[in-house]
Amino acid sequence: MPRFRCRCLVLLLLPALILVGCAPASPDRPTVTDDLERQVAFSPPAARVFPLAPNITEQIVAAGGADRLVAVSTADTYPPMVAELPRIGTLPLDFEALVAQEPDLVVANAEINPERDAETLEALGIPVLFLTYRSVADVPRTIRRLGQWLGTETEAEAAADTLAAQFDAFRAAADTVQHRPRVLFLIGDETLYAYGSGSYVHELIAMAGGQSITAALPTAAPVLSEEFVLTQRPDVIVGSFGADYTADDLLAKHPTWDLVPAVREGKVFSIDGSLISRPGPRLLHGLQALRGAIQGDSVDVPLHLPHLP
Figure 1: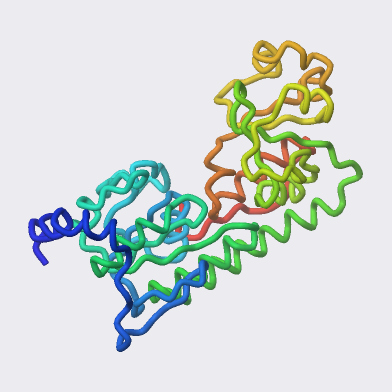
Figure 2: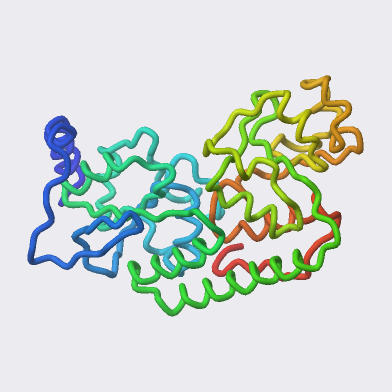
């Protein structure tokens, strides 16, 4: 379908689609079940794919599907090849721009992308499949699923096996540590955004030889109080604070933390947030950075990222 017809189609149909929701799948088309247990009309392999989240882009490349990408989101930064692809806003989703790329599959991150966008796209005949990321093991698992959807099973299986083995090496190294410091991972250094229960980030901290002090908090994305940090007294504080960040920088924003062990002993570390917040192959680099912050050493793992620089 020519792109100008796609634009006209989506502009004409979008208001109605938002009101009526997703059209039912045709009974004579094959269906695929995604991670949300949605039955989606889709017949693999996909030839033109659009990922709604940056971590899915990285996973598609790792699964051997780089040549299937028709565009990436405006938030994508890795791998370097994404600089050559068209960019589409996803939060909110630019339906017109997406339809113009004529994808035959859209892949979404269930923790980020709303299902209502999928309903609109599927009513336009574009299948949307969701993936979930609740544990580190979901990274190799979803790479395998992508291989099935893209028809790159052999490459995806090899990539997933390699990643799983490297994650296992971090777990084995963590089993040998003598002391597990209490770790606070902060998303920001002013407003104290953190990770609560149900996040794979606590598993990463454990695999790096620490114990997360926010793992038991009932809220998925808690905002911590000053009192919480003062009471919990973390041994190590890690966050995505920017380059050349020090304990003095954190103390300048939170002067009462001078008695917190992590601040008093200078164990405040900043790492690239995308290595933690984007569940994909680069979690390996995030793990190595966490290991260095928490245990002060590294794990002898090659950090091989299949199909990625």
